[in-house]
Amino acid sequence: MRAVVLNCTLKKSPEQSNTDLLAQVVIDELTKKDVEVTTYRLADHDIQPGVTTDLGPGDEWPLIHASLLQAEILVFATPTWVGHPSSLAQRALERMDAMISETDDEDRPVAYNRVAGVVVTGNEDGAHHVISEIAGGLGDIGYTIPGQAWTYWNRGPGPGPSYSDTGEGHEWSENTGRTMAANLHAVALALAERPIPA
Image 1 (tube, helix red, strand yellow):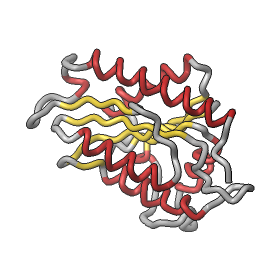
Image 2 (cartoon, rainbow, N blue to C red):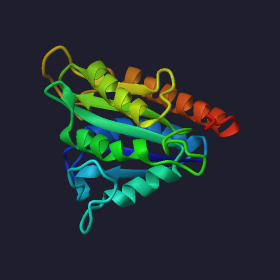
Image 3 (cartoon, rainbow, N blue to C red):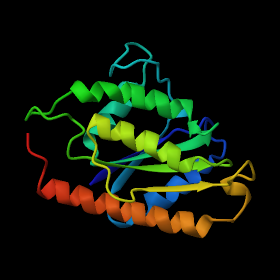
């Protein structure tokens, strides 16, 4: 089984990403279940604005899109900025919009029989709102969102230290992340055995 992680931090490598740190908890748990995980830090790629899969020369989204179609599990990880997902998270969803009209050999949307979950970090409140925005978009595209397939860490209400600056709340976020990974894996296995019909 394969998983893709879209890390929508605004920080380019090798700068430390709080979103990457929490997503790694989910990755580690998936790896224990023999899931092969590929991570894309979107800030390191040239992802042009648009709502089609391939925007021509220089556009790196087609590579990521191909990975999504090879994976049964998607982990969509984003920081919170002014109470919303990052601009890169929004751009990824816009590019994934093309998947709604792309179909498999049985004429199903290509995201059918794939599962997705959400990781959110931020030193402000609003994580549940961000989870709802991302999960709602992924559901529209065709992904199955298992129950409690999310985890988050934030310092709310109001601004405060970032995830990497404090140990506060880590135990809860990490336990929730491990549950997220287990639920994603379980539902992915169920869909592999009994796919959504055309």
